[in-house]
Image 1 (cartoon, rainbow, N blue to C red):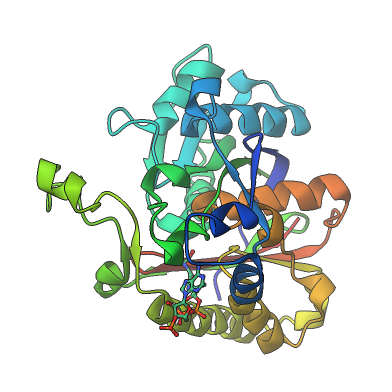
Image 2 (cartoon, helix red, strand yellow):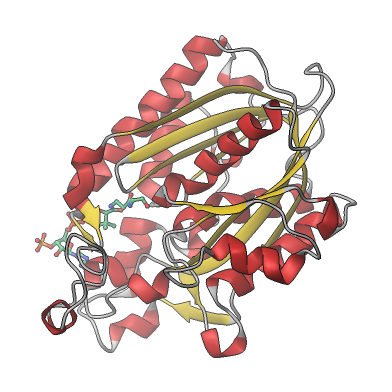
Length: 333
Ligand code: UT7
């Protein structure tokens, strides 16, 4: 097991679009129904962004970030690095992080995007920790922001019902010692052979945009739901097992687990693996659906603001997503 890393979550924030889309809205145009969606996914409603109202990936990210920075008792100019986890960027060029920097900061700071799909926030948090550990950065703004509706095929019932839009942000700060808040354990890995199970086939260099790709709807997410489901369950179990065995931590000592919000059944399977009751594993998939890289930081902000996580608590984040990618972080907050 690696040494604890002296970092803490010093502030969080979230921003979700105004428009609420209930499962029933799909019933008139897709062969699906509210009951199927609830039972198979746990989703009841999700949010859809309206870019004309500023609800873009960077727009939501900036809103969430301002709240996180304020909660940390800092000002935007105290931020010395910005990392944005997203698979639905503001534009192909430049990075979403540069748009965020432009809006937030009065001076230049390093800013970049990190692409790891649903594991993006955990990857970014761990990257922030490593950057703080170099001694060159003190307050890193880590954001998960997604407008998943730009890559969601609203004619495909298997995926249209799953995704939602939103953003969450956290300020990760260095701490002088590791006896208080710290990153106690982490896992980060990827297996690219899962590429065709969950992907957007066109719009990149492998399949550049053409009239054909537009006609074939290849700019939208394609998913082999059943295979991804099986992989997600297995990888989440592995994350939990490895964390517990390498740290020796008793699951009952973990105050809260925040899993990526992919599917109620996937989350429950991880919870059962740990033998934890329902109230120890946080879920908001019923209200927001799967917001990919934004799901964990949105949960995080809800938990901090409602008092579900208190100073000194052990918090476990776990995520699995396209790539395949997966990661976890055990934190004392
Ligand atoms: O974010 C990280 C990565 N993403 C995930 O982790 C998602 C992983 N996958 C899943 O969550 C699930 O596979 C889904 C929720 C996408 C699908 O649930 P499932 O229980 O795996 O359903 P299935 O794909 O095995 O399909 C069962 C049936 C099929 O009909 P037949 O072939 O049995 O007649 C589907 O065509 O359900 C049908 N179906 C639907 N029926 C009503 C698929 N989508 C829908 C729908 N409404 N929206």
